[in-house]
Length: 338
Image (cartoon, rainbow, N blue to C red; front, top):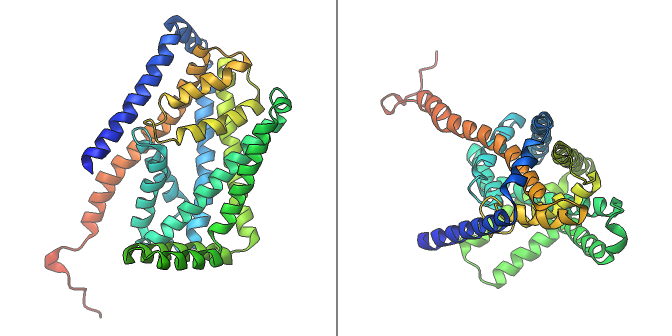
C-alpha cells in the first residue's frame, strides 16, 4: 500500500512538472519577467488582505454547520484549522487537504467523527453547487461567450440542478433509510454499515433545521465566493489584462474543478495549462496567463505560510500547554472536597 501511494505521488509530480516544463518552453523568459515586473504589487497586496474576510465568512458558515452537530468549535478555532488546511494544500491534493485534514481536526476537537464528517460532506456539496451557479451565472452575463455557447449553458444548467438535488437529498432521512437498507442487502462489512449509519444519522439532523438556517449558510457562502472572485479580479487589474469581471468569474469555476482532478500536486501545471487555454481567446498571451497563475499561487502561498505558523503553534505550543495541564500519573486523585 505504501509503495502504491509513493508511486501515485511520484506520477502526480511527473504530470505537474511535465505540464510546467511544456508551458515554460512556449514562453520566452523575458516576456514572463516583464509581465511580473509591470504588475501593480500594491493591488496584489490588497488582494491578499481582502481574502481575510473571505476566510472569516467561510469560518462563520462552518460554525453554523458544525454547531448544529454539537461540535464545540468557535469561529476562531475553525479559522485556525482553515489556515492549517491551506498549509497542507501546498503539497497534498486539494480534495485531501480540504477534506481529510479538516475532518481530522474537527473530529479530534470533539471526538465526534461522524458529525464532523457530516458537516464537511454537506459543505462540500454546497461548494460544488455554488461553483456551478457562479460559473453558469457569469457565463450568461459574459456577452463575449454566451451567444455562441448554448451547449455549455445547457450542461452547466443541468449540473447546477443536479447539485441542488444532491444538496437537498444529502440530509433527507428517507434517502438515508433506503441507503442503509441497500447496505444490508449488499452485506457490507459491519464496521462499514455502522460507520455509514452514524454519518447518515448526523446528516439527518440538518433536515430538522429551518429554511432560515439553510439560507443563512447559503448567504455566508455566497458572500465568501463573491469576495474571492473579486480578489482574483484584482490580480487581473494588477497585470492590466483585457479580461472582464464576469469572464474571470466563470474561468475561476472551471479552474477550481480542473484542480480537483487527482492528477497533480497542489494543481501545479493543471492550473497554468487551464488558464493559458481559457484566457487565450480574450487576447491574453501565454506569458501573461502564467504570470496571472503565479500571482494566484502567491496569494494562496501567503496563507499557506500563515497556516504553517499555525501548525507549528499547534504542534509545539498547544501540545506543551496540554501536557502541563494534564495531571501526572502519581497525582491522579481528585482534591478532597471541603
